[in-house]
Image 1 (tube, rainbow, N blue to C red):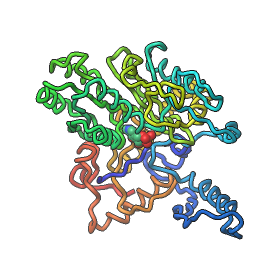
Image 2 (cartoon, rainbow, N blue to C red; image 1 turned 180 degrees about the horizontal axis):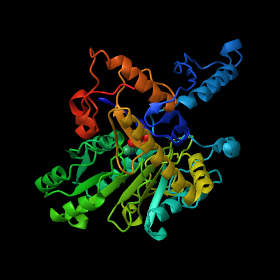
Image 3 (tube, rainbow, N blue to C red; image 1 turned 60 degrees about the horizontal axis):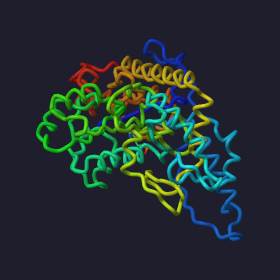
Length: 430
Ligand SMILES: Cc1ncc(COP(=O)(O)O)c(C=O)c1O
């Protein structure tokens, strides 16, 4: 890839001190030199009583904690919200082994689970996506990947000889699902903004008309935050003669499920989000919601756990539903709307400043992912404002004498967003 994908984390973006950058000019700021990247620890398990000094478990853990605490200020480029303080209230829960194996809606014969919290979280998402309480089924997964594996599994069960259609910009978990379930795959081209190429989808649907379609729709692609248009896809299915019993739609909303309202009254089979991304959660997790009517095909009574089961894994993390419940309850709808607004504004802010500095950049509508050219030097480990200032200054060094050309990224983000010499004339070196 010829580009670096910088995904906004609300903490880092919101701490961007706008007074440092005025009309595209950078004011002099006192830059704190970040500590070097975290070094890989050469660790072994220590037999009790054998460690001493720097090799005792407590010393090692203390040091590890110190490093993480330092590094968190410079965490840039992955789409996680690192703004949370769950540990303050929830750390005591670590005393207990909480296991939610099986169906969240089945009464558990043992005490050590958190299915009550899980169902509360699921109800919240069902309400957000406007699915009636008695019409949905779902569970808290271990992340967006498990949600995609589950959604595509339902599609496969309902339409056993279906073909999976997904855009080439889809997350690798979708391709993994095709491989695991040995489903025939049609990879659909994308436009430069990362959205599905609808004419390619139409052509491929027409070509395979004798087989049902399992369609993965991206609500925020991994690299560009592009959102496939559900209404256009539904229209194409209808135009190509696919009746409702001949297609299944899964939405991968891992990134943007809380940003883009999209579900209302549409024939969507399942939706998944990652809980640790936009919402923020110290343990990877996700939410999968589907229609209750679909789940009957998958659900089995498992005597060992005294529960029905239609999930993918066996034991399931009982802490994450509480973490999600706590996040949602502390932020509420209004807090989440404020986060959405702030992240969208911050993403626009960064994009505008990069653009003013004549750096190739692209930002999709309703996306918090700012896509920019990959820096020539890969040692960028800093806060966002340092990143911007350094990028501008280093580009001056890299490209000023003309021996190395600034990258052309027109193929990746479109000629209109590319600031290379060919597409945007001469660089202005700030
Ligand atoms: C669009 C998309 N879908 C799915 C996933 C997988 O999510 P997880 O990392 O929670 O398994 C990601 C992860 O970045 C993603 O970007």
